Image (cartoon, rainbow, N blue to C red; front, side):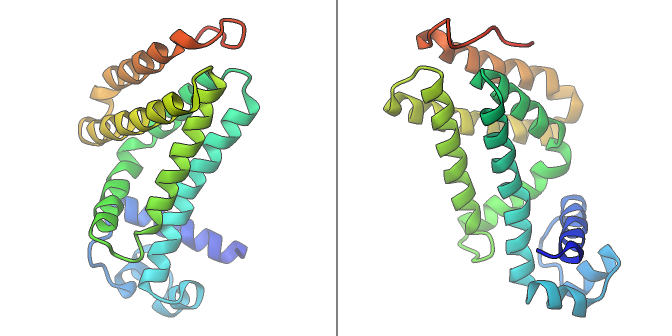
Length: 194
């Protein structure tokens, strides 16, 4: 990806996060991000191409962040807490866009379907986290599914309540994660940082 395309995509993601996707035309998007309709078409080909790039840039990046945190931390739970803090910090900005894209994926809109791939990759990364924490593969996959569902629900709440709901959301996710430590070997898992 060229630097110009990457910079333009970042502006588009921020604009969608603030304004929503809806049925917004390329001309309106271009005006909103300070470029031309032709430039958006040049870099992304079409509105659907632009929206696919937004999905990949936003949720693909989150998956890479989680994978990097897990790789760099000796305690997978520390990585999970750090990832939760990151996505919760961004919830009021990015969560509305996530849920709008998720609804489009549920409706089978081609540009949103790649979100399914990212959700599956998050599940795989979280399954690896729980295996690393001492769970059998089937149990790890179940806990990964539960963690994803809980995180989505808590992010939904945070997007609506804002900072007022943050302490309760943090407590909920940490309580769930702590409940999964029970089978892990004390030698491989250190105490939580919070």
